[in-house]
Image 1 (cartoon, one colour):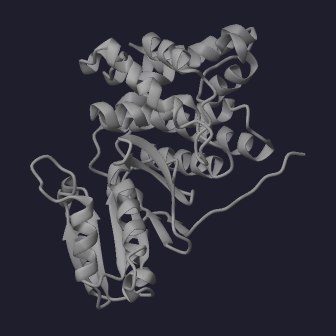
Image 2 (image 1 turned 60 degrees about the vertical axis):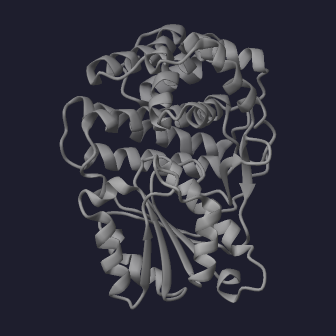
Length: 374
């Protein structure tokens, strides 16, 4: 049996109303916190609720809700210096993938501040407002390396990550359309992990569960389910995928979703939405049995079908769902120019053989995949 290594940093608190624990957890690590948050979380007063919970435990909290946004002059370097002069002990990130990556980068650089007692013992915590985050259980994050102007995977300082909170209640204001894109991106990650050549008995089990829960969430969203059920299913899918990616590395489609997001400032979930059916198309002939199983897991009735027919039903199911939800189906829908996609392929290929990515395809093959999706 192949060796399986689990190296999971921090604790994950997942469930309804776990946000109420943020003050209690943070109070273990100090009384001066810096909260990095998505500005749109003021709607629903989620940011204000977190600040109140921190204050109730005697934690002073400074809020930054415009890091890297259009019109903001604040940079990561400025924020690290601000944390240093404020003698911050806890850095807390709250939001989607971009904010979480910024939080990791901020916390990592701040921890490496020399001759600074608060920085040396600082703690990092995060509150997710998205269903999927493949770096959730990795001691690493992905961010632009300013020296080479390319995406790079960075390792985290040891004993920095203290906890992650995932509360479905924060996601109650998400529209059905946006829920659909997040589910599609979650299924992209689950499918690519399920089909990975690096898989083993544990990752296959995890990604089967991720496909099952993601498919259930998608079908409930298609039925117009207005409760938290689709979101809870989607989060379960994302958490299972994150467990899978703590064992094996992410593949080409996930890598391309990150590079397109960074190069063209398109939300990663929208890119994953477009790439998902095309990823399935590629594997119909090479892995029909696995893709047929994936189709059954997401809710397709494959009884009596030949493996090739059952395999094709996966992408058919996704395309029908895209039409019902009114979601984009082609990269050209984002006003991209085909020649520019070569740059995304080159950058994705450069992520190969890192601690988080395995991209065994050439630049030409990655570009061919993008052309299919264009």
